[in-house]
Image (cartoon, rainbow, N blue to C red; front, side, top):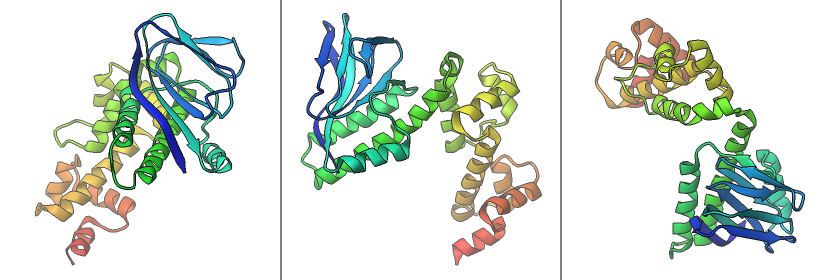
Length: 267
């Protein structure tokens, strides 16, 4: 179990900051650098200047050293664990390193999770320790995704990251009035179709076509259960010109035809 000692979100040091703890802070420390700073990872006094929002998780007893001469802002979580070996096993499972800086593409999302944890930490919520443990594990899973993406990100990928994340969220929300064809999505970012597909696949591990199909089928499943529209009407609402194509693709994904799915849902 994770035990949160201290937590801060959007913490601002108007005159800069100097952190120099050769033996750490007597606990583990997660820092989200919201503004540029000089940060030492594994070797003392060997600093890297970071411009992008970045994260580091300091191991227990490890060197914590970073500074900024100008206004500095960060999020932080000081924490302990009841079983260190269990914590290290979790990090290994998540491929999430200690004492290693990596950039994060969605600071707003990440900081929002820390803000939610801080609000919970200072509340009188029921089962607080268990809930904080759950929220912190969820944060680590999100960081694992971001670390994986940081390994893929070149400057060019990073340039487009926010826009691609917005497109992917739009795909999985699914709006009947939006054109989710690859040419239309690529044009929205002024990219060629092939380059758009290349970036998308590298960022998310799935093709944009696969994500669009999955989103359409999920939306169709909801319509089949909660509307009285015909199969053809639902196919059209989900972007299919040919109802037979819709039926074939639905069965490939779900295992039954749309008609069988609806009948089963109603029984």
